[in-house]
Length: 368
Image (cartoon, rainbow, N blue to C red; front, side, top):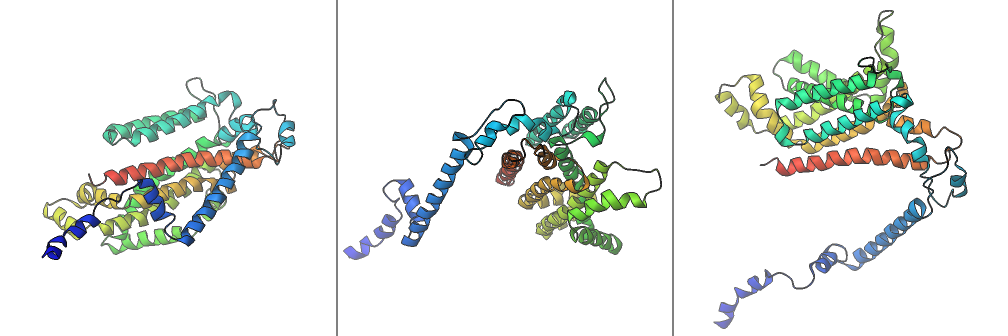
């Protein structure tokens, strides 16, 4: 009888929390669960520590931070021992703004600030109202005035002089802003019951996805003008922007189509039972659910296209990466390209990491 009455106590004891330090318990469970895992953990930690120590020695302890104007002699002395971060204050204006007139570079700098402010405001769900669209339109118009000039006492600057971070933000922002609704229309077209619309949508997606972005940019820059009448010319930046929009639309269409397929059939039937029209049904019921389902792949596509804007190098547009490459042509600083690329990589990382973190916050709140 004693054994029978004591039996239920064993599971209860097993459910009690393990005594001891929870940190040590986590380390023992995840990193040192066995002898091979423990050896591998120690080796990886040793390699990581060595890498961090070497980078600190090269990038901080032995680095050259400032030099006299356009004098890289101190960097050449420290070459191989420490980084030459002095190239960043020497070349940062060219890296960020390209060949934009030096005395007018406050205009692209203000444009970058406006872009970042728009992105920040757009992440606030409380501001997702019609007024936000008007704010975007007004801010983009102001950015256009700042970049082009020619009005309000601002000197005119042609697009051939634009470069650096503003060009990257313009290509990425307009590419995704117009590519996203295009992707929605194409995704709906691929699921249409009308054979002509469905066939055209499939043809567009398969054709665009079947060629690399480089080839589309080449066609837009070199081949497209050959088919235009004499004297008719479209700016090179605009042609590249259209190619990026078409490319983004095809990839986003497939992502959104996956979200549409994930919406339960009952949602369509419920919307039909309410008597909603096709567009009201998708705008109010189907698309909000579909987009919530595909937030991770959508953000992954956004990040990929933000980085793919660097491919405009092949048609002679000076985006951020191109201006960085051009900045180190100077013979005095040509040996210190690693530092420039680290600086540019940090800028790309900040924008991409911000998008990634925002997508995670959306995923955490999408069920609320």
